[in-house]
Each structure stands twice: as structure tokens, then as C-alpha cells.
Length: 265
Figure 1 (cartoon, rainbow, N blue to C red):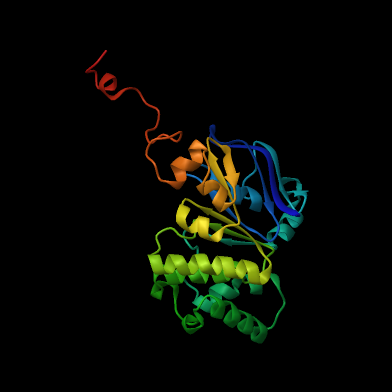
Figure 2 (figure 1 turned 180 degrees about the vertical axis):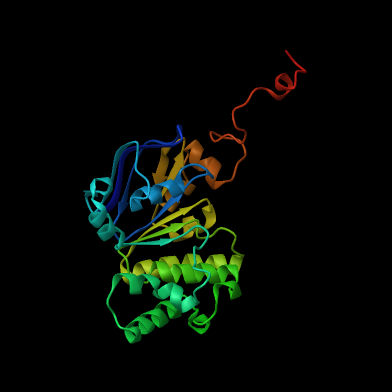
């Protein structure tokens, strides 16, 4: 199966604080791949590295076999036109209507006339169940509706690669299930490759074909949903079963509390 995105021994740090430490993984074409990990484990950083917004300290990120960070500006923009991104906080333009948000990328990157753009927007909104909200402002949308608009915008150009940054965060159960189902159905209908960055174990197990679990700046375990659910790996067991005790500590390393307070030598 062809690999669309590949990380090879990628290291990255923020202001000297290591985030990724030799991470390697492959995203196969046409699949929904989940990236699991705790907050701060570097999941969202992966998406920014793929899009070229960040540059690794060392290692290689490839898209369609090409080094993302070896591209000139024009080459990077060509790559980005093949990528759709659903931002963690939605990222909708507050001064634009629902229709204008979905149409934004189409207007920026094509020379289609207004009638064709309107038709495409109607189709995308129909796919996410929001054609009736076409003229609403973003301030009039519920959280679940805003996520679905963001999803429609991510798919506006029918990108070969769709990336979702915490798409399930803060959603009620009905909206959460609807967004998860849409990601799966749109991926299969359009033949897209999807990367879903999340800490939501339940939904990722339902929607993904393959999963990577990240901790300590690297992939600690991987497999299909069934393999991870039945894995004896301690990282997988702790994360999937939400166990407080395990290889991922709850407390940040610190001096013993009593010693720090001067109550114990």
C-alpha cells in the first residue's frame, strides 16, 4: 500500500524543551489513521510539521515521497493545496457567513465562477447536514455546528490528505458521534487519506483503520483498533482503559512535597 506521509527519525523541540525524540511513522494512502496521546505529547505538532509551518530539528517529513522542508515557497504551497486541515478550535472566520467560510479556499485557489462555487458549497454543506445554515454567521452556530462547518471547509477542495486536530473535543455525545461518522464516510466516499489527532479513545477506536500511540516524543505502540484494545503493551493498556497508574505519570517530576516545604530533610 502506498505511503502518503512519512516521518523518519524526527526530532523537534520548543525553546529547548524536547517534544518529539526520534519519532517515525507512516500514513498509508486511503486510510483513516488516528494519532493518540496525552495533552502535550506532540500530536498537533505533527500536523504543523506536515504542513511546513514548523521545521524539525532533525529527521525528515515526507509527503508523496518528497521532503516537505526541502521545498521552496512555491513547492510548499503546491503541497498545501493537497491538504485540508480542521483546526482544533474550528478556526472559522468570524466576519464571514457559513457559506463564505466554506468557499474561502475555493475562491483562493481556483478560477471558478460564482455559480460553480455556490454549487460546490451547497454540496459540501449538504454532506455535513448544514445546507440550511448557509447564511448564518459563525456567532449563530452551536459548538457542534461550527465543527461541522469546519469539516466542510477542510473538504472544500477534495484534498488527498485531510487532517483533524482534536475534532471531538468539547462536543456533546450527539455532535461527537455525527462528526466521527462524517470523517469516516467522507474519507471513504472521496478516497481521501485522513489523520485524526485526538485523545478520545472511544471515537478513535470506532473511526480509525490504524492507530499510533505517542508518548515521550516517540511512537510507543501501534496497530489496528482491535490490536490495541487487546494489547498487553503497558502504554496501550493505560491509555485505552484510562488508568491513572502506568508508564505515563500523572505528576510532573518535582522535588518531594514535604522536602520542598521544608518539613522533611
